[in-house]
Length: 231
Image (cartoon, rainbow, N blue to C red; front, side):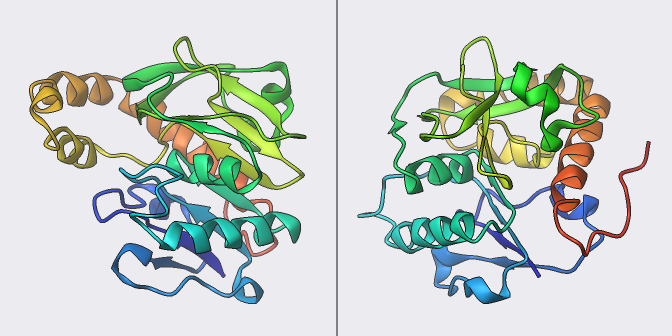
């Protein structure tokens, strides 16, 4: 079973389930859901959230989640961490997650590194592609990890550790309603809502194709995959 962890009520899986043709279940630990047992996990996706990767005191479930992530990586179970999920992967493996470093907001270009161009997660994705960014913190690359992608403002956009665990800083899951919902969090972003949504809409076709390809590439890491992404 593919398990998806939603850490924040306002940061859902978004469009990711649209690209899945396998059974999955979503857990909401912020409202008391119990995290899955590792023996039930075929693959794990951990979503973003407004909290930081080290905010365990405010969000105690993060401690248990990082323990689960370490176990998943050790067991070589496919893992994909999105934004906070990528930061949690880094933190769980001993790398630093830095507050208010390399912040980005909006639809921006991400460039694959030489290693990224060869990586299975990015197969079929252009060397430079459109992404949506909404982050204040950023991860360092864990010891033994490979840097896969960078952007102009944030040199650590994606990494892989081991054979099947990936963290990405960008958001492949967002939709325009999600973006507008996030913009409503404070006055500064509320004033930018139309611009942020409009820029996203202008790149929506490329963005959606990249999201579909990335999710499809991830799902291909385990045997229950049954349908490729449409060309």
